[in-house]
Every structure is written in C-alpha cells, then in structure tokens.
Image (tube, rainbow, N blue to C red; front, side, top):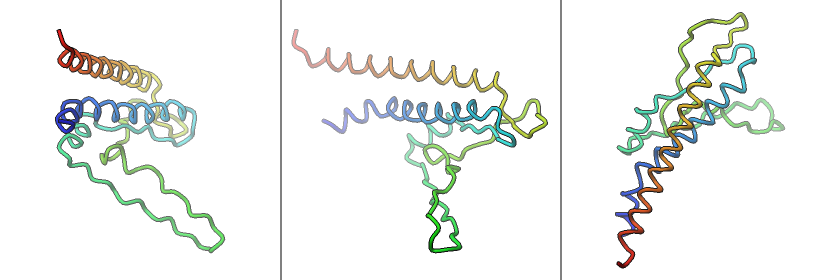
Length: 140
C-alpha cells in the first residue's frame, strides 16, 4: 500500500527536488554576475528528470584533492558532478564580457522566474494529489 502511494507521488517529488536544486544553481549564477571569469552553469532539466525517473542517475565519484603536506585540511571537490547525476552544463554565451564572465542577467532572471513558477505549479499538483487521496479515504 505504501509503495503504491510512493509511486503515485514519485514524479512530482522528483521534479520538485530537481527544481529546488536548479533554483540554487541559478541563484549562484546571479550571485556571481560580477565575478571575473565565472562561467554560468545550468542543467538540461528534461533529461535530468527523465534519468531520475528511469533510475539511470549515475553518481560521479568525488575527485580526491591532493594534499602536499599532512597538515593540509582535506578539501571538498568542486560540485561539478551535477544535479541528480546529470552533468552541469555551461550556459551558451550570447554576448561576451571583457572580464570573461558569461552570466547574462536577463537570461538568468528569466530562467530563475520560470523555474520558480514551475516549482509552484509542482507544489499545487502535489496538493491536488493529496486532496484526491484524502477525498477517496473519507467516508460519505
């Protein structure tokens, strides 16, 4: 019974998790709009969601950072393994900048807003699913 409920809600749960992670990535792009040589990153959401639903997400093993002294603190690798096992992609540059930064604020704000609206739509869909389940189990 619980497995059927999990299956019923799995798509929206996965989509919402990926949308939340993508929102963080887009916010990072916006926050680094003035950072020299920063390259804007994103994911192919449809491909990532399809891979997650098919169970084909592959976790890339983290890269060990070399320490040249025993006194060095072990660092964490950069988060280039992507979201949901899907690799992070570089945003296509429409207009280059002198400092090498590829963040286009118009594109980033548009993607950020679009992702936020789709996240809210996903939350609404989950609420609808839960209301349907509640209506089905209540007497009368």
